[in-house]
Length: 161
Image (cartoon, rainbow, N blue to C red; front, side, top):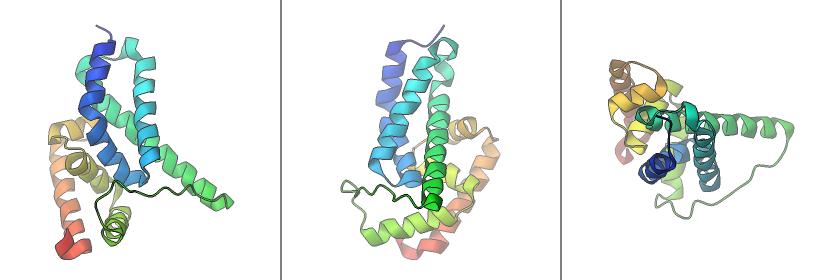
């Protein structure tokens, strides 16, 4: 049965905060996070005839992650072209500027696979099997990447991790 509006609304209520938490640790801009989340839901809605409810969460996460990656690529291109970046303060974020900067540096330096697993599992709250489904990797790989990511953070951040 094709995806209906009630299922998509329920997914939005269920996933908005965890998706925001994941995307914020990628984009570091609240407005970009909200835009990516809304764009992901709009794209899934546009394809609702082909979407099955049982795969909805994984599809939304994958779509939002791809949109965030695209935004990061465009940001890099704008930097190379000398176009000033949009700056927005993260007033909602309870972390200090130093903590946020340390986490941002540690995540940026982390291998992409480990970073994505950490973002989805710790910041997004997804269980290992769902992370595996979103990223298209085996569940065992999720566990080993998460372990490596946590070790990376402890080494990079020390006691504040």
